[in-house]
Length: 223
Image (cartoon, rainbow, N blue to C red; front, side):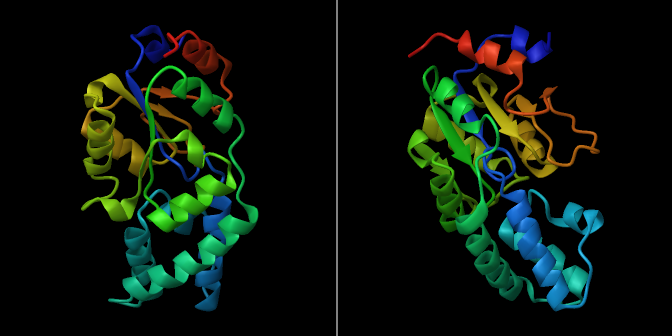
């Protein structure tokens, strides 16, 4: 039995979006590969590690450094956002088990989504996945002063849900999001996108369809 599942139930749940609820990482990879290709550069696992989970400005700044384009972050961010939005709208799908898990949790406790994507892209992804109406609280990277890995996003989401961070639960797939949630004081269930990483979440599972997870959530008192 996973230790977190033996503890007391959370009073609220906050989900990441990209790579956790929505299978958008392939969409980001398509856009990122195109950006690198336009500059005659390859895009592989090492390059993906530079950007995964980061906010758009942080990812663009990392790319600008890799491209040898100092000061080019803002232009690269605009280029990347256009590319990835087109791919998300056309191809992104909900992760296996995402809708079922959100429905189960929302029937028991308040839920929110806190994403390092800008609002326009977050809305596009949630709409594409049929998840938008499930979340009364949605928080995007361009709506806080400091996105993940800073704790502000999770602290703000907890304020909006009227819950103490220690009484909430986060779901994350990236080290950037994990650091943000832990810095804010939330326990984290991790579903890592990069499987080879050491992922120090409180509980690590292989997918949102994890039977032990679903059995635990089904046991929470309904609202």
